[in-house]
Amino acid sequence: MKIFLVQFASKEIKMSNLTKPRSYNISQQLVSEIKQFIPGGVNSPFRSFNEVGGTEIFFEHANGSYLFDVDGNKYIDYLGSWGPAILGHSHPQIIKAIENAVRKGNVFGAPHKLEIELAKQIMSIFNSIESIRFVNSGTEAVMSAIRLARGYTKRDYILMFAGCYHGHSDSVLSSRGHSSSAGIPESFSENTLLVPFNDLQSLKDCLTTFKGKIAAVLIEPIAGSMGVIPPQPEYLLGIKQLIQKIDPEILFIFDEVLTGLRVALGGAQAFYDVKPDLTCFGKALGGGMPIGAYGGRKDIMDYLDPIGKVYQAGTFSGNPVTMASGIETINLLKEKNVYQYLDQLTQMLFDELTIFIRKHNLEIQLQRVGSMFSILFAPKPILNYEDSKLIKGKAFAQFFHRILDQGLYFPPSSVDAACLSHAHSSEDIEISIKVICQALNQ
Image (cartoon, helix red, strand yellow):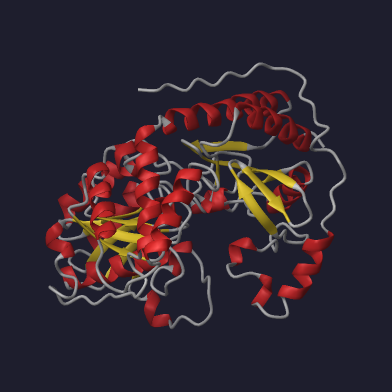
């Protein structure tokens, strides 16, 4: 096994390459132009700078741990494409696999061998997966898994955890703990139950009250959209035990759209040693290509059309280009000791920031699991959605722009997970520590 060791030596870091005045003129022009054609100027609201203020940045290319915008500015990337850039951007072997697949045909609308190969790869590292179906996004995977759970159990209720994010389909938006979208009939929320994250007693009460009515319990095993919130010790296992004790017909669904391959080769379920009935995958599975999948016990998956009565379809599902990218990503993750390296890098960052935060007595919480992390402007650790309301958005917005102007690109959100990649270097981390500490000291 190849071991990667990361060393950090406290020293004065040269900042000349980051402190040059930055121009965003072209980005500003493009922001004005795009709003004439695309609502709000973004194709996903996560990309908007509405929360942090200022002008969105248009990027031209990415390589390794770096992003490059249209104005020629360079950034150390901590967005990670919202999670999937585990190996960094434009990895040459992944690019080669994609190019080879495209030359043979980018979509067939019919079966091909790469679907089998990626399915086998996933089953080799996720012991909960006996059968799988590929789709095109995490949202689609979760939406389909919920339909399958309802069809399999012949029940309507879905129990979720306030603040967890499961995509933008109608039946899950209420999991954010508030009315998060117009255009959804009230009747959809009637079949959605919400309990606090990291609270087994509330879950027990809900399972008991609605016994015989709940089709599935759906959870992000590591919350990534209200601050990175790990489950409390034995929490996930406690959920499974409560289901088995109170209502064993309920399906336990892990939403590993972000965590699958991100926190461990076998996802959060391997990290915490808990086996769900169904698992939803998304961006983290595809090495940068659009992908989704859901899988689990074969008896459940066999309820899908054409052998079962639950309908789900997609022209681009399992397309060869995406399958090739996913296969090569898993191959690379198996070959390299990626997760130890990522953990060491993130720990390096956190060790130095912790020293600074304690020295200056700042109300900032550092939370992480593996290479997913958050810098939260809050007076206490964030354990659930109610706690996340304590996060100071204005303080984060100031921090975001201070580090942006020094060449660090974080998610433009005070609550969403930042991520490292295997392409990040110890030098990247050293520079980032100094930039972040300077920003916190202003």
